Image (tube, rainbow over all chains, first blue to last red; front, side, top):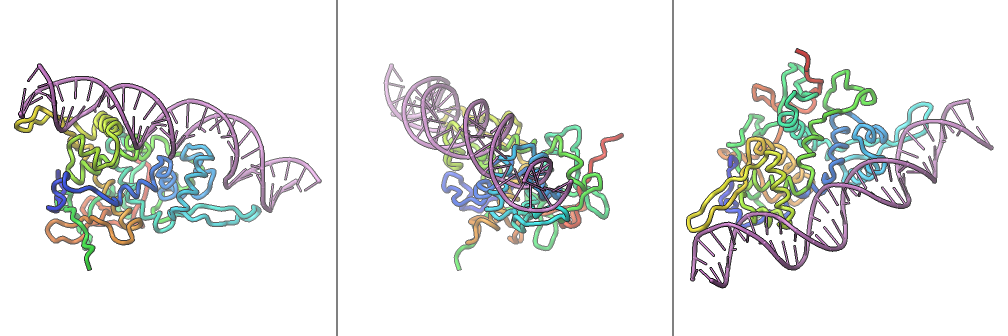
Length: 160
Length: 160
DNA sequence: ATCCTGACTATGGATTTCCATAGTCAGGAA
DNA sequence: TTCCTGACTATGGAAATCCATAGTCAGGAT
């Protein structure tokens, strides 16, 4: 294994992951279509109901259920908007909580592109200025890169 | 939206994400327990069947199905091992393909810790040397950080 | 007043995921 | 030879997710 473990975590037989943040995240993002909805909202700027339906490739019932769930979970907000000559409609806009899922979505995209699209991924993420490819990685507070071998998982200090 | 879009992608009504790498990744990682199995294997060094069962909190049948699926998908390999005084058994070890999912898992953990654990996450990821917190972010080829506003999504060049 | 459209809601059924419980199977230990 | 243990497999059923199809509903357009 490459990531180091604090000594109290080192033997997995002696403890269990309670209140795991990953399990909690999957509670919200469990259904497959949830992340695909967020993909559309975060990466491609989709806001409207029927575009979610057609682009995610899911039925209206499923899209409605997911959008409602994601809205209740606070990842999207339902905002009224009005195009001239149309009545008021609603669009689904990512909140900060929703936007902060972008690294998850891009990390998934990077992994899928690398391992599931041997002919090359259809889309790539680049630096807007230099057009060089951008990847997901680990960063220290000062913005310098860390590799997986540099990482350690430890219990957070909950005392004081 | 913060990420920029290539002009041919700008209007989501004019195209559809075909062969999406994210959808492909979710095909492999669809069931909730898949990612929890990978969490154990990648972050906590779990290798053995019954530890996956107890730590993920899933039945043996589900664990067996997931381990088989993840093995067939090439994220884990089933390797024989032998402890003295025991017969040969098998353990599940992440492959490179599996290990490359670590950013996804850590990104999910970071998001879950931030938004679902207001009392503070039970575990944190730090730099092994400095013990400073490490976060998931975006990196240019030279290892310098990029923010979301610096990113652009564009079709990959498939010609030539 | 009627039509139309975007945004849903409702119903029924197939499939997947999951749990609980029980059984199997290969060897080392006694 | 029998027991035990770790690693599964089998069965039955509950629940979640999904699809296909059809219906509703609000209001601007005509």
